[in-house]
Length: 231
Image (cartoon, rainbow, N blue to C red; front, side, top):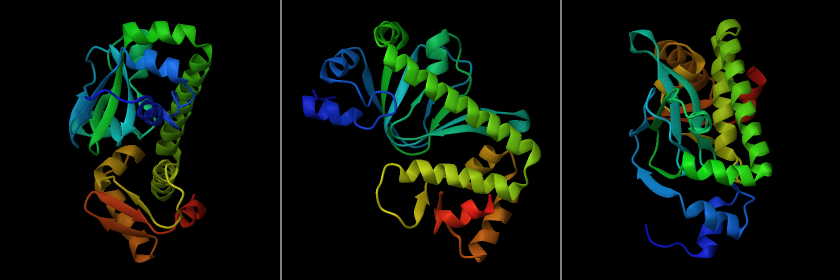
């Protein structure tokens, strides 16, 4: 990768959940040890059980964090978007990866190794607090997913999942109107703990109601506020 100018470096981290407030000196220190990778859609970044020696920051694209259950059924634990981090658990405790990370779109990611990031984190108490908040938010989302899968009807679970995806998609843009999600029905089914057939049936109910449009590897929400009323 070519050498980045200082303006390009600052732009790279602008609005990032963890690194967005770093100054020029901190960004230089971080990038001096980091490396960039580009992955095409559908590539495996790491697999469950592999050594966890680094944390990743998504600069562009979306990544699916999942685990394979019995009979090859995939459970989607999280969808990671531009501006978010992943792989932080193994980075902090030095253990194995707890899930698979697979690109949903073409992705640009920044990779920071354990031996370089931990000393940097020890000097920045404010980043430690931000990282803890990110981990707590992930834990809350996981708790909500488990509770929903056990007690909520499918309609509400699918609506909530679509609302979360729409919120992540619209946070990076100012325009309102229809929201185009790059997610397959199989991935959505993995997020809500249901079969693809059941999710497909529910989506088509909303298509007939004029709420959604379905395309190849995408779902278009015409008006997110309508789904919020269903939750």
